[in-house]
Image (cartoon, rainbow, N blue to C red; front, side, top):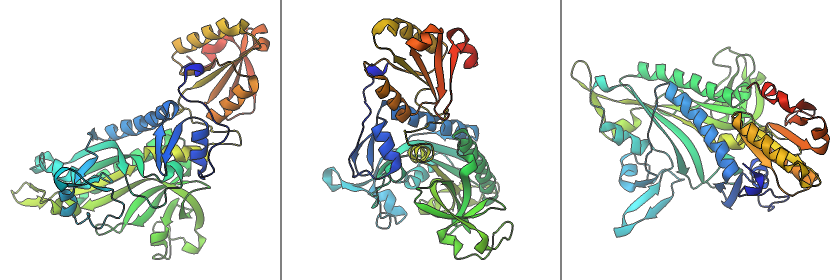
Length: 415
């Protein structure tokens, strides 16, 4: 992508009303644009990042048997009435359509997926099933001041599993835990993300959150450093020691964090409400047992920025950066333009994703913008490097730069 043709531009300053670090950096770097509190447009660079995060998640959900669907965002009042959540779900956006028919925008999809699965699951032979979607959710969030970490419109992967019994649910529940840590590992978050015990509701003692440590995180967790299990505020008052290693809770470490995922055993909470049963091996009718598993791609995007930045801008992990390489042409005239164009073409033919800064801007502007955008590798072609038949290469997370011969670039990128 030639930067001179890029739809967006960087900004030196943004409005003072944006107080979150992640949104401030993403807006300044041209990844997102704020429409209103908690509502953002994903611009070309930002959408590339979001798509990469979602594809990492999608691949791991497919690997544990998930089948992807896409459910409606506009949901009728009747299904929420079945579960008594029309009046009790405070964050629902409600609206009225033609003939005074009432709807809610999808804040979560248990009320949609349960009657959907009922249409296809009748017998124990049809179980288990695992279906998921990656979709935009809508919640009337009262505190939408944390950028992508707390939006009124946000992206969510929600997986729903359907089982004949609790034992089968427990087995799959553990598979999802492992899949989530595979996701976090690919995002470079695995070493700072902890399984966190939280209130389990009516069907289990605990549910589980995935909390990622962050200085500006809205959540507080209490970590048992011995076994690496954490507890959230809801349950910490109820326990005296770690459930696993018996360490006393006064020895737990208090940390700030961001909830990047959660998993719940739903039991028959929703299947009973919709009369969703299956015929077991003896011919008796039994309630289908459910689990649900959420992870927020847009929240992860914000989390990555909160964690990976310096005074100059964003530092994207390689797996999700919008482009792998930022190629900068720095010259006082156009004498090197053809060589830079050729280098851009050559890098692209190598299979690299390249953002090519071919703009008529000063070296200072280009260098500052490159740091702000935060691609993993910066290449500079200048009059100085041209004399050496080389390019200057610097990784965004390093202070060191090196000259690499143009003929050795394939070896540098291990292509």
